[in-house]
Amino acid sequence: MAVILYSMDPDPDEQRLLDRINFTDTEICRSMETLKRRLNDPGDGRRIVILFVKDHEEMIRLSQTLELYTDLLLIIVLGQDCPQTDRIAHRLRPRYTTYRDGDFRDVALVLQRIIHRYG
Figure 1 (cartoon, helix red, strand yellow):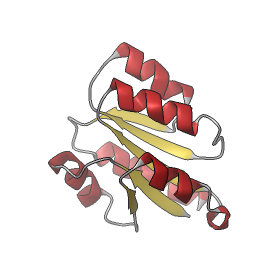
Figure 2 (cartoon, one colour):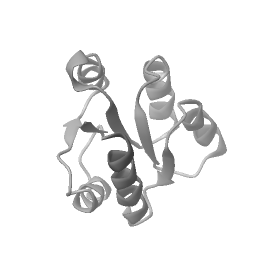
Figure 3 (cartoon, helix red, strand yellow):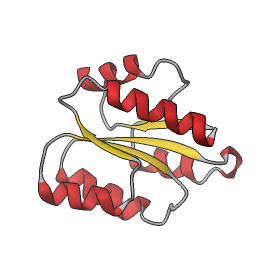
Figure 4 (cartoon, helix red, strand yellow):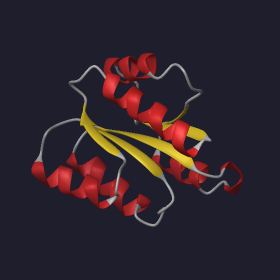
């Protein structure tokens, strides 16, 4: 089972997340095109995608791209608490949604459970 992290730019929050989920191999996609190419690769089976979203506009672009991928197991990390961004994120039916200001223990726990259940 592939674990893919989408994050446009490396930053300290992303590194904190990667430190928490170091129990699994994680592929990082730095662009929307790279993410789409990766998701269109048919050989992986189920995929866990962690979206590291910086702002509302990025969430809109991601939702437009990912709404057709109904088999993804999504975890979404939002950059800010904004009701409009939350609504767009939930349209993608994520397994879990959180914010950057946490310590990401919750994300690691959810990821472990997803891997155990679907892996």
